[in-house]
Length: 191
Image 1 (tube, rainbow, N blue to C red):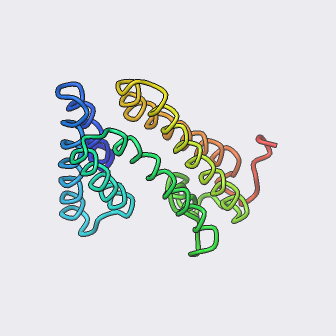
Image 2: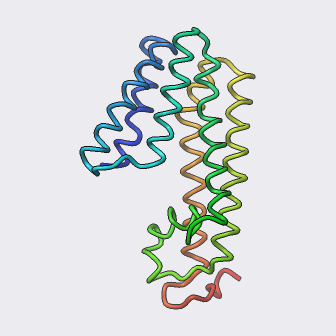
């Protein structure tokens, strides 16, 4: 259910774009993000940090897009989000007990009880996430300013989502294969 909620604003944006264009889609995205925050709070009694950050950026860049009637603002939103995420991942190298990568992926591995991944591996993977989000932000700008609005919208909705899923899936698969469930040692199959 949580995954459906997270994609609802993106789907609403795409459908609204197809029906009414970018400015209508931006307004719909802003409304959908407000609904997502309310649903988050009602379900969890809190708003996840990533949803809050994304909503603030949608409200800021969406308002600028609508008031100034300039699509460049909404096109910058994914890049700013990715670059702020890169900074958060980078900061987690030194702040907190675990890197953000470890917090996000350890649940996919069944928790620390089943898979013992060394801190040095988590830190290296965390840097990979920093680089990934910096590159993804740059890629968004490249598509936004070198291709048509329609291509950018499709890239934002389908391309960025797919790239993120593949990136996370490859890392989880590598971690599962590399580190056996019974020991903290790397699997001999992956050497």
